[in-house]
Amino acid sequence: MDIKSMKNYLYWLYCQFELITCSYLMEPWEKLLFYTFNITMLVMVFYTAYIFVPVHVSTAFQFFLHLFGNQRENTVSVLK
Image 1 (cartoon, rainbow, N blue to C red):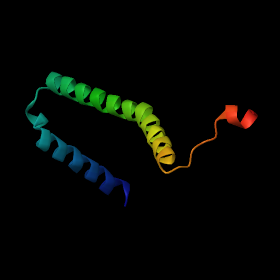
Image 2 (image 1 turned 180 degrees about the horizontal axis):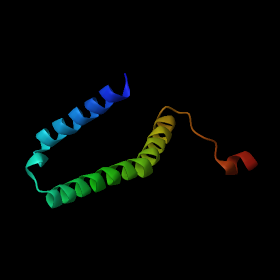
Image 3 (image 1 turned 120 degrees about the vertical axis):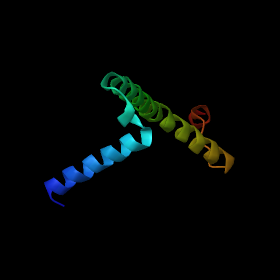
């Protein structure tokens, strides 16, 4: 895929996005507020997923290991 067709494709995607969100009807200052809000929400979702999903996956993994009997040894019982 050459650069010109890629540029046309990205422009086509942008036009589709504007049609779907009806943002082509907005004035420039409204578009700025709309895009700023959407980008802020998207960044917050990615940040939340980056911070909290690994913790929940780790907790679920430990729960299922405990549930199926593959328990970690207690350090106190190892030292006795």
